[in-house]
Image (cartoon, rainbow, N blue to C red; front, side, top):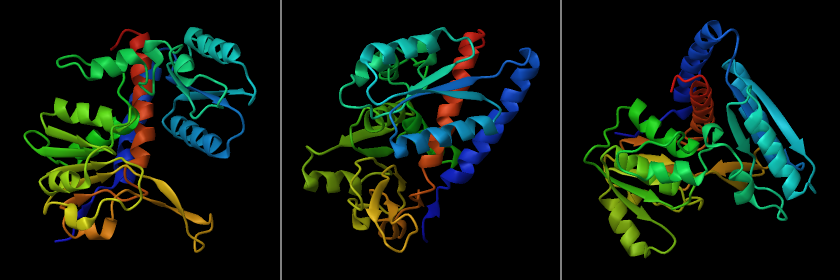
Length: 297
């Protein structure tokens, strides 16, 4: 049987509808106040501007407020950090994101560390990262993509407890946090990465009930490496040249989709899998920030 498609687009839409209803109810009970998402963007990178536009569009669709802090390419570290501090003090802002990457003369870590923990919508602060990895503790916010991966599995009814899971990649944004979340779901987790021998990686994958591919290497995971009946979530989104496309490129995941789909029970496509969930989880985190501000969380 061919694999069932994990439709991230449809699941994210359902989540946004749920958020829209909750935001509307909060607006009624909180004298018109709604969650607010702020994005700090430096320079004129078209990809960064596009991502921020998508986030603001999604926020508006669920009834949230959103606004940008746009800074010039040559902005100083001091001005950048002062802009973040202004958002910390803004009562209408409940989630702050700094669109990365920043220009090379700026220190990303120092800028991120200026975000108040109660507004850390991307969950990049050490306090949230640390709590995520502590047994029996919960962070104020969870990294959006990693959270989206686990919610996809939950919404598809894919069991994690007692299952063998392999995470390909150890980044702070996806690999490490998704491994922590899977362990919180009582999966037995193995993380493989650039330092793992390929023979070992193939061996781990051949036994995995759940595969999360987040290496950023298009088509790296071969279909024959996938265990029959496994669930495969492909986080990779690498642009590759394609003259048949209007944009001149297409997005490719880390997994050889057709080959893996012939063996897996569940598989997420690229695009249309994890991508829409990342924005949905960002909105969810912004709502959590609002609840923190009014004492409901």
